[in-house]
Length: 113
Image 1 (cartoon, rainbow, N blue to C red):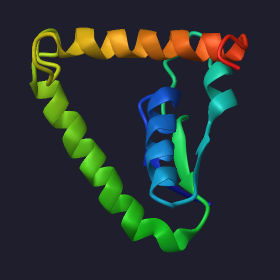
Image 2: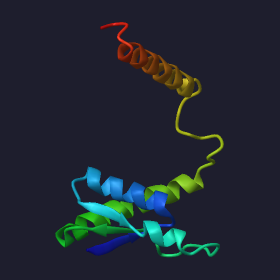
Image 3: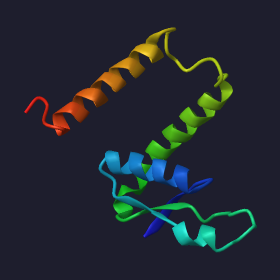
Image 4: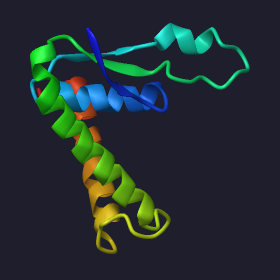
């Protein structure tokens, strides 16, 4: 297995591996247990994304470059204010999610069955 990406932490490694898997590239995260073994030291180079098939290397590198460029452009924005949504859009989305959750709950209880 080839290491294709060294992430800042396990969470980022899972994000990158999930992105690659969604594109049909078999990838997995390595280094879960190494992070816990370092104690109070800062974990370095433990969260890695590995490819199961080395033939996917070039396609994976292209996707990772796009991820890194998008990540850098997100940092430049003011995260406290600009989330890319119009005013009120977040509220509407939240209401739809709550309504959907209520419907699923009622269906699971057999109210509509």
